[in-house]
Amino acid sequence: MDSRDLALLAAEACDDRKAVDIRLIRVDEVSSLADWFVICSGLSDVQVRAIARSVEDRLETDAARLPLRREGQSEGRWVLLDYGELIVHVLTPQERSYYDLESFWGHGEQERYVGAPVEVGGTGPVGG
Image (cartoon, rainbow, N blue to C red; front, side, top):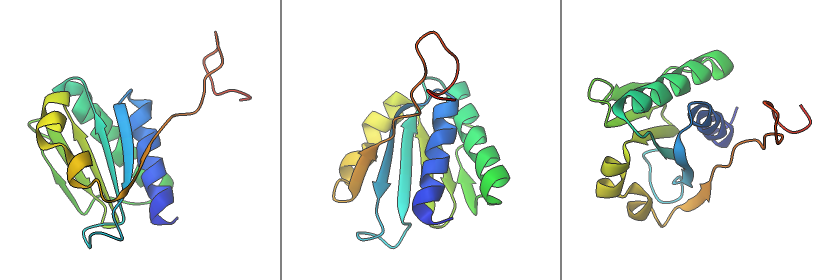
């Protein structure tokens, strides 16, 4: 699994917990910190922690990966999960606005994650 696949898997896990405004930023050409950042918002500290747990569970289950480092889980306003080539940031809207990581890393290639479409009146992905 390459670093982009890992980032997409993390973004999907964020989406599973109804994260808001999920962004993927490719930073490998502008930083040695990581290849990708996934940045998203949770609307409360409880949701921020739930999103972070979802990412940890998904990456452990589907990619056999554990974070090298995690920060902020007890406070729940900004959780950082560092997987080496991928860093996941889950923030409350207030923290996200204040730190404005998208602008700071604006010179990296950015894309908005849009989850799988859901059938109207259905509960699963289209065609699934």
